[in-house]
Image (cartoon, rainbow over all chains, first blue to last red; front, side, top):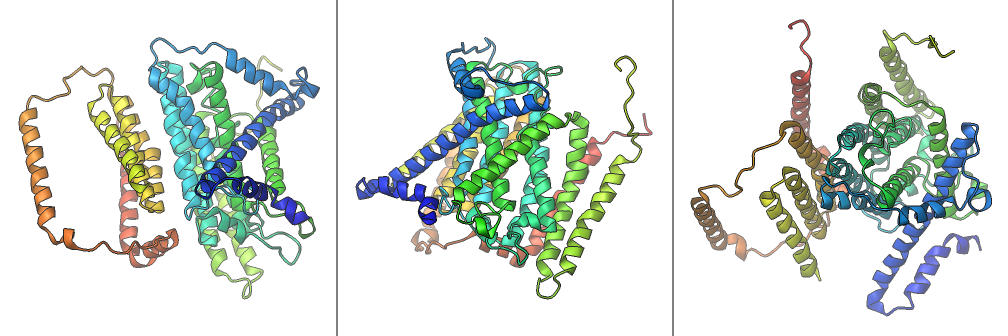
Amino acid sequence: MPDDLDQIFVTLNHLIRDLFPEPWQKVVSAVISIAGIIGVFASLFAVTTVFERKGLGRIQNRYGPNRVGPCGFLQPAADGIKALIKEDLVPRAADKVIHFLAPLMVVIPAFLVYAVLPIGRNMVLTDFDAGVLFFFAIGAATELSVFMAGWSSRNKYSLLGAMRAIAQMISYEIPLILSTVTVIMIVGSLSTTKIVDAQAGFHSIGLPNWFVFTPWGFAGFVLFMIAATAETNRSPFDLPEGESEIIAGYYIEYSGFKFALFFLGEYMGLFAISGLGITLFLGGWHAPLAILEFVPSWMWFFAKLLVLIFGFIWIRGTLPRLRMDQLMNFAWKFMLPMALINIISAAVWHFMLPERAPWERWLVGIALLVGPYLLLGRGLMEGKKLEKRTYRFAE
Amino acid sequence: MMNIVFAIIAAVTIAAAVAAMSLRNLVHCALALTVAFAGLAAAYLQLGAEFVGFTQLLVYVGAVAILVVFAILLTRGSEPQQSLVSSGWLAGGLVTIAVLGVLVYAIAKSSVVHRAAPAQPDVTVLQIGEALMNKFVLPLEVVGLLLTAALIGAVIIAMKEEGRK
């Protein structure tokens, strides 16, 4: 029975597929899978907006949405209808074609990358041999669409916002990719399913074989999630939009449903990159404990995804945003060296075999990461006076 | 089936390349060029070269296109409108046709035409990686060194000169 439940979507897909004649079956199967992915993640987007607003409200000591439907959970429906019937304004000076294409170009890559995410046992749309590369190649298109949005609006704020966003995305893409290199090195494959398979099974002490439970994996996961936060323009790295400086950034001239598309694209990117983080470091759809393996695999994927989303909301409600120079310094002077050192740590871990050096590999791995971390941190803090800020007028 | 897909990809790529040369707005040209890059990547993918196709996307659409766009924005303010067709278009066209003729003639005459196509190898990313790390490790290192030198050079040029005012 647990196996049936685990494979329920795969069986369902096959059942519907078999209703069609032979030459159509491949297409029908693909269409069903794509519709499933779009439906599920778009609904997750709707639920997440409510959770985020309610969570932020809780953190900031207010209610958040609580009027539409039970506990405000129909708020996304109301927002969607509002976005649809709003007037779609296009500035007279705007480049009409590119202004129209930019929101589409944000959403399309954001959905395309789900093709390689294994969301359950046997549940991956296309198992590319170069799956991780596909993810980053498609994700790179987002930067261009951000530029298209910012430039075509003919608005200095939107262009500045686009420049900021692109500079930030390019800077943080390097530590993002370098932190995934460790996993690719250890697994020896770029295929997402093989990466998940490599994390199957459990240690003798009961911990699962996930990469996050190794020194390099933990450091890689933290680096990956920080870079992912910056890549998806989320707080504390949400500089591309700032009400007091550049207003809404590159989508300032968008209204109605086009604005909603940007919003959708941003959240889809967030889910996708969290999904990749789960695939790379958190064992994909594998259960965290051996006794919990009866729970369907896809449930584990979405449980981990929700935990990561909650983490993102928590961070957004907790940390103040960085300044632009702090952002760049952090990317190039801290994240990049740490990611490079992490690769060395992973290589050392790989060559110190567990049979020959069971404890030494842990010691060396941790020392290789903690030492540089302390040194880098000290070096960056040098000459900076960090003390409690005193206010002259507001106390 | 394959020919229809290839025809679509080729048509899109060529149309984008023509647009990149003939559009008046430079940013439009850059964006059209990006479409041409993506079309090339699609052509690689259609031939089964996953790694090359995705790398093409990652490098050209992700990085080179952004570089081109930034360069246009930072260097050109309002350029004077020039005619797109240069005055020597007749001579240029003749030279182009002559070069094309020579190339077609040379290829048609050579032994390449008579050679049977080799069986398509099933290249995986693993094999490419192993080849890069074993057989071609020296060229790889040289390229890495060259790029690092270029990077340092760029930083030195961009650095503020302190002391001299």
